[in-house]
Length: 599
Image (cartoon, rainbow, N blue to C red; front, side, top):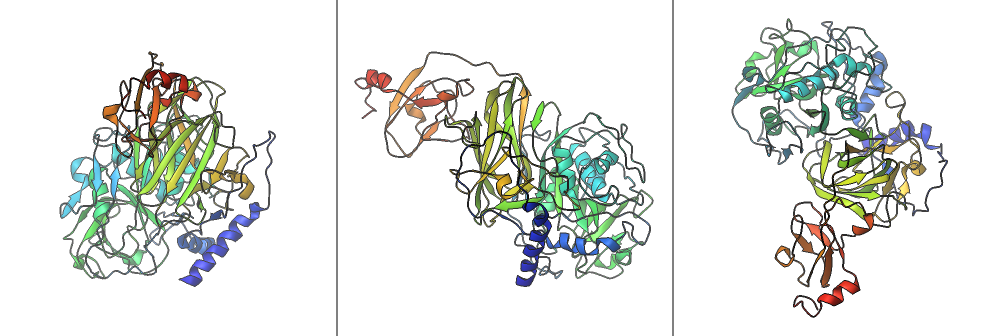
């Protein structure tokens, strides 16, 4: 393991060294900032290196003439699960203690949560109208597009029925991988969350061997949330995948397909080797009682996932098949794609069209990163989007207007949001306190993440030869920090590299409510002080520290004057910051004699 880790680091350095010696300058001067310490890029996944070493002799077809096409992503999400130590022995199920929270604006039922519970012994999406018809990728290597689109389509059913275009996704993914020769769930996610898709199948129908798609096709939905479900740790560690299928729909997953491991008589598949991943499918159900003797080579125990392939309805059981729980490759790379109405947001700001390519950090589980944008019109900043690479990642998002120290503004932040995200993936976080913008306004989004056990928690886009070669970046776009105080332009340490951080706006600005300010003083600390506040406009506030504080209620949070947003010493009970500013001495003096709470 130590040798493999050392080789992984060395290969990562070789792949990125081709561009690390360059230096990008900016036409406009950058502010003087403190250089951050010990930035590093995480080693790429062992599966990606295996693919690099074998791709020249690898065909996108299997022995039966069907297309495969999975390219493992460079990002390593194996975590505590190691592909070299995973066994297919029967044992107690390792129940995964995570939950999948639906994002705000999801078309799914409000407040629903996916939990890692076993549920029923069998389940089949075919029986409840949660699957679109089986499709056929032909001999091209586009399984990844069909599996990701299949997951997205399934998540919308039965309420909304769509047929999205795999052709558009595989032709316009934008990566350096040749069209029709492979992809993965990270590439699919990048295409979707940058709003390139999904588009209608009717507007861009699938065609074998086709490499051209029309431009300008309107998207049908906006993808704002993609969950990367942690890998199974042993054969019966299936509860989280099952729960995702039950609550959302078809799950994107990968395997190693070998024709010799397939039993056509029963449409059953069981692979017990250690070969690299080469095919993506959808998990659409399960049967805990599916007998081991249904497989030509019986696995150690009963039980199988129900899977949908992309080889047409004449293959398998009308396009479906069973994969043994004891298969050593299924369920190691899993994703769940979801969508929202495309009118949820009207504009997206981003520098990472290729999305999450690698991980970056400072050797600890905490890191800060930010992007600076310029508003294109009169609008309101409503949400931000970013990736998390670990389970139970804590985050804090701050929005700054007119940043004058890298991404930070000396006037303080205009909005703040914090919370915990259970699973890795791409997530959209709505701001409880949106920020009004006008054309030409410079604003920044800064994120602090704490990912326990991970020392490189920041998702970045960078150029990798033959994969993400087209990635570019300019000075003044992305910033990083190890402590939130000293910030450095990311291109100083990694040219052509951006952090993966987006901002979402809606057209027009919300009206600002004006009213006469009221004043309240108190000295209670360390507890929630809602009972001591008068005329507040949102949730209760916790007083930080032991110093008595006097505040002037200056109005609603979206008030346009950024100087009225100091937010000193406040922690929200519901991720909401009040629009309070420290009261000046001229105001405090008027209330000292009348207030028993102030001292």
